[in-house]
Amino acid sequence: MSRMKRLLIAILILFWGIATSLLGVERVGVINVQGAIVPATAEYISRAIKVSAQEGYECLVVLLDTPGGLLESTKVIIQQLLASPVPIVVYVYPQGANAASAGCFITLAADVAAMAPTTSIGAAHPVPMGLPGGGEKMDDAMKQKLSNFAASYIETIAARRKRNVEWARASVAESAAISAEKALEINVIDLIANDLKDLLVQLDGREVRPGKILKTANAEIIQIPMSLRERLFQLMRPEVMFILILIAIYGIIAELNHPGAIFPGVIGTIALILALYMASVLPVNVAGAVLILLGVGMLIAEFFVVSHGLLTVGGAITFFLGALMLFDRSDPFLRLSLSIIIPATVVTVLFFLFVVGAGLKAQLLPVKTGREAMIGQTTRALTKIDRDGGKVFIEGEYWNAVSDEAIQEGETVEIIAIEGLTLKVRPKKESR
Image (tube, rainbow, N blue to C red):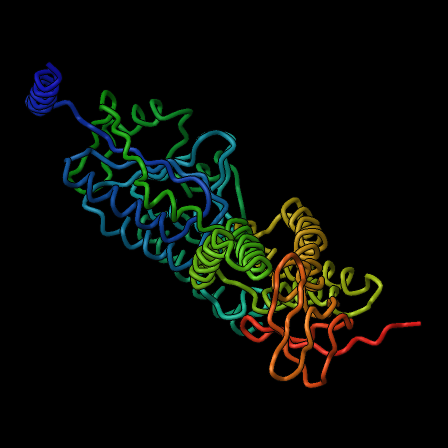
């Protein structure tokens, strides 16, 4: 019965597709791009363009809300938008959304740029991917070169789409940002729409390319969701990398502190590999990473050096400063919030004080069980003991014993070593 149902559903879908094609019902692809612009975003948009072209969609609508992103990822997206066989409509949505930094580049590169009311656009300064040392270490000459490149690049895009070139340059050089209403007034965008339905109505009949007039008023909206892989890599953000660094520190140190636990070591190693991969993409400040490691080292040193808590305080401050410097705080996309840094510092200090401290103290305690625990104990000789051997009774067992000095039966002996199944002993002088 279930097979019949599946077959019936497949037939209905097939006939629906054929009927839609014959009746000429237009379709519009829609994707939702929220958050930072990273490599996964570029991959998502590229795939959506291919799907839209293959399915013959009227256009692809990109719902955009972003604080910015990486320059390399932005360049890839711009190239895809300019070369797309399907008209691209970038719609800054919902109300209150923002097309900042990289989002400004992407909006200006669309065939149709639209915004919802109470949205904003501008401050176009994408972050360079994988810049050695991070943004804080970029010298003035490099900053100027990057700014000049970004300004000329956005000018080219605006000119290509016949939009306001002067404002486009100002968005980079002066970090200019404007509202949707102002953007429409000075020819930065093409229209303002209240929602997606309103957008499609306004797009209907618009000639976006020579000979290409959109028919979208009654078009069917087809959502193109992110794949699982794209969703996972979309999490490539500073706060995620920072959390992975913490997991790596906790996991690896917990494994070293409790050898054989396996699970903490495996989790810590995986987190470390993922953090290193993100570090190859996100612009990480090396000085911040070194300070974090130094802070951890000081917290560990507290258990081996008598500092009366100074190393703990110094380690906490160093760790905090390292986390603060790990990314360039001047860019919203890379800004690691104090609401993350402060709890992370507190949790790290507590982790070392109680978890790591308890483990180290346990390892430094003298052995209390097993064969090694017998070393240093005393007992009575059951027989004469010399280099040829003898017998003692200890911990409920009879043991063979040898001694370099002759020991008479009944004398007190001290165990000084264990060699296989034989105890090495010496006479124990009775204290008076």
